Length: 202
Figure 1 (cartoon, rainbow, N blue to C red):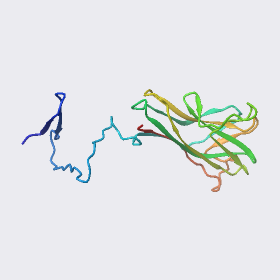
Figure 2 (cartoon, rainbow, N blue to C red):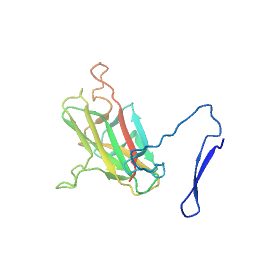
Figure 3 (cartoon, one colour):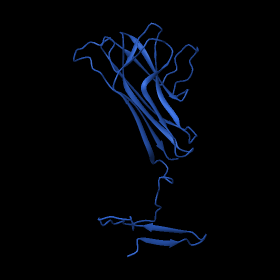
Figure 4 (cartoon, rainbow, N blue to C red):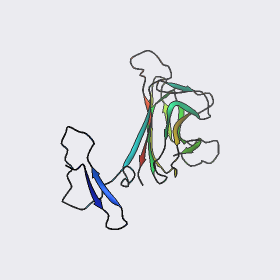
């Protein structure tokens, strides 16, 4: 019995072959639909909107920051190499933030060294431009933050997406994954954070 079915192209001189595995002890069936015509999609020729690859970073430890300047959050960074320069990247992120009573913290999404998915500039350049903001009513609270953004990197080269954090004022301290008082009580939980990137076919 032949292990390959060869179909010659109508023009151009090429051919397409359907080839069986070199060795198997199982019987497999490939069924073709009869309801409509269609095209077989491949990883190099996906349908628009298909998810091609997914990469995620999860942070289960904590991070603290005492500064108005944005700083990278350790462990919340992912690198992805798009298969095509026309692909889009869907980014999702989330976690919990703690700080002292009535204190504010900002989260910023970055593509390499460039901030993306941030608000417009306010009346003054001193106003923060962030992707998410959280405020705490008490030092034993955490507030959830999160966001989703469809980015067009226009490249097939490795691209890094990451999260940064900044305190709302120079003397504020903000935390990822824990409360400000960090008491060893059941009511003060430790929480995970994540960033997920998905390549979406154009």
